[in-house]
Amino acid sequence: MATKTRRSAQGVPERTLVQRMAALQRANVVRGKRAELKRDLKAKRVKVHDLLLDPPDWLETMKIFDLIVSCPKYGKIKTNKVLQQCRISPAKTIGGMSVRQRTELVSMLR
Image (tube, rainbow, N blue to C red; front, side, top):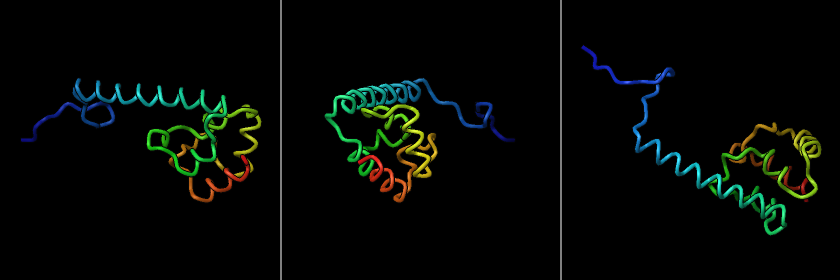
């Protein structure tokens, strides 16, 4: 007879309270780092080119659209136009970009 394990609606095993709290803590750290990064981009203390060419691991799940909009002189419309010219979906994450997309986007932003 098969043993039953608690599973969510999608068939994935449920996490324990300790696992959920650890994930929440990691997510809060990442959100804090991203907020600080956005402030640094606005103040021109960090260059977006360096981030795109060699992103830290906590930045790889961020949407490329959100990163570029955080840069000075780039609003939603200009960002969409640049991404469209580079053939990059606005929903694409930084970690999901190909080498071609990275180099093309960096050359457009310079």
